[in-house]
Length: 470
Image 1: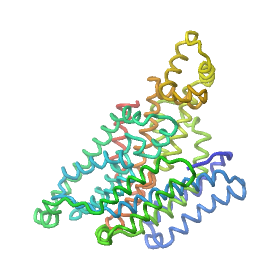
Image 2: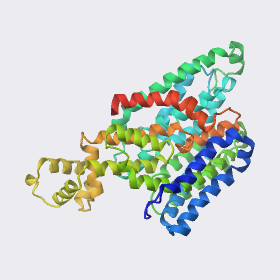
Image 3: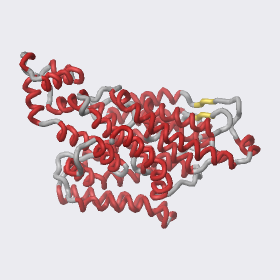
């Protein structure tokens, strides 16, 4: 989401965003019927206040246009994946034992790196709910959000939006996997252990005869609507299209229309498919995207003042703000903070000047090392004499062993902490909406944080910090 080309507004203008967060947190708790009826007025009304401030008071259209484009891209991606995944029906085999469930979540965490957390969540949430239907409880959905919709997607740029932005800035495709796999193993492994302990207790409460009567057939794995996998591949490929404008979104919309038109009605009925979940997400996130503009602009202007640059700072600061703000611009804000604080501007200017000369023997060792990094990451820019200061900063951050742990801390913080709230990552609210539709008793906004994020996510995050970023 975004923000360029306008001065940072006063922090007071983040009040509509805070009010919307409070409404999302307390509305379903204090007035569930009223909230279900009036949440569009609340979300869109608060969003309109922020839009009016920028359009009328500041007359700053650039951040509004930028945010409108990002919201459109976001909702088209989420919506198209929702429609296409709704046309794929997976019947799993046998009883959902704690071990089977744990393996399913592990596979979901791996698949999140291939389909993205949104694609994996939309593809797997319905079979996950069906395979556990005879003993379905809140922890099944919450740990699905933790592992499939967030933490699992930490190994590739496809996995989560901030990592994709890093890829567009020059981070090599497999760099994240090469540097973040230990944190992924600890994070995913810890959450799976927590889940197994909870699920085993839940499993033993269900009488054996009930489990046997309601479990999926023992000899059946069925996949219906597999043609939609090709449509899903088209959507994921379209993510990488940047030009011309709106071509990417047009392809995604066309793919969703084709999927919905040609999917058999029996599959949609088996998936209990309708458009209510995506409607709720579209309305709430319209308000969130709009009201978040001042908060993100303030963060971008003041990120360097929030603390001393260190692994601990980057992990906790990036993560904490990613729990409430969109993790993609939060990632970019702290990436800019890292390059500005850790790489002196004079060193960047000297490296840029050295890149235009051929007297390599005259380079001091630090400059020579920086140029070697540039050759690894941006060889074409160096060869064509189009190298920028931003590319030099990124190359230094990526290839200097003393600096690149900071980017690892920013990357892991942005991805992992998105699981801490319903709004921390786009798929979270979508999964909740689908679970609500299927009558799963989901916790409120604060209940999710207090009952699950604090006792399960927080210990995992502390462990990852203590092992890798302390």
